[in-house]
Image (cartoon, rainbow, N blue to C red; front, top):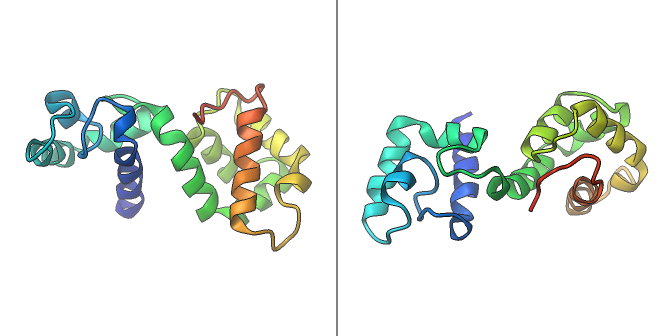
Amino acid sequence: MRTILALVALLAAGNASAAAYGSAGCGLGSMAFGSQPGGIQILAATTNGTSWNQTFGITSGTSNCGKTAFALQGTKVFIEGNKDALAKDAARGSGETIVALRNIASCQAPAEQVGSALQQNFGKLFPKADAPLEQVRDNVIHLLQSDKTLACTLG
């Protein structure tokens, strides 16, 4: 679990140029020290790490951690790590991976609607059993971005 949270924090920090925080990423440290370069980022990172507010901020979109900065990269990582489970749930139109995908992609539509869209487009998303991971990932992201009824915020 800590590895996943660290990956999420790394992804958010990788988008630092799009937000008002430095290399330490979002969180209480970024609110206190902003994007000041240099050693101050060590203090910002320490503040984020010791108070665990960065993890909460990333998942909730608070503490200077905008969801849109995380949504696209987080969605890519999620699909890559859960391709097989997502394929099974997409074929059914429901399941835990669809609920998680909906949340990570910041979709406003209910999970049932996201599941229905994945199920209806299953053949396009997963064109063959051994489709390359990148192709499946890009197909799913394209659907989430292009289907305006799902209202996903993937940048």
